[in-house]
Image (cartoon, rainbow, N blue to C red; front, side, top):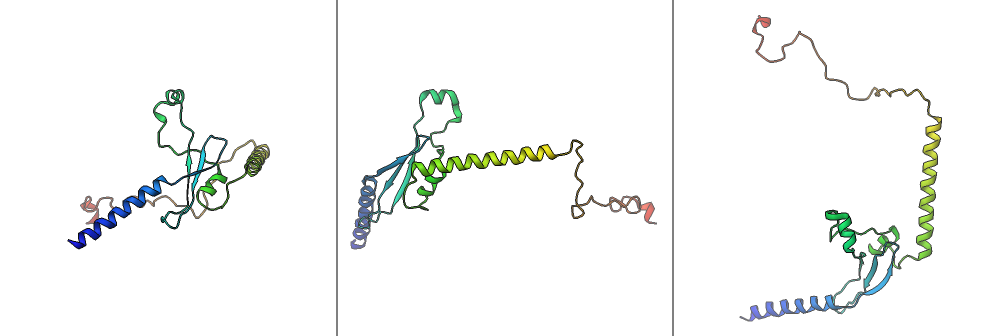
Length: 162
């Protein structure tokens, strides 16, 4: 009987600890251009709570639900910028600044534009008569055929064997 009380008391303490963790306060850290809000729950060694970070997506309007229909899922993953994703995964300590996000957005647009310029140059330098590329020598070859020398189904042509 004493063993059962020990198990029950440990179970009750775990339940109380879980409820206290759920009631601990989260701090709003910031939001992004998509309307997502980012929260952080600080670590508490006394309660055994680790640092937790999460994102709360922008809630959908009824208009959006009607517009997209069944494509909208309540539990869909929100669009999260790379800087905020690094913060959520605890790869960086502090949240990203607006200046950093703008700088990275400009940089990615410039990179995309340079890629488009390279593609356009390749199209301009391409000859008009398109030649289909041939397979390299190391490519797989077709299965060999041996003609009528060998039988295709074993034992089907008894006349040829004799």
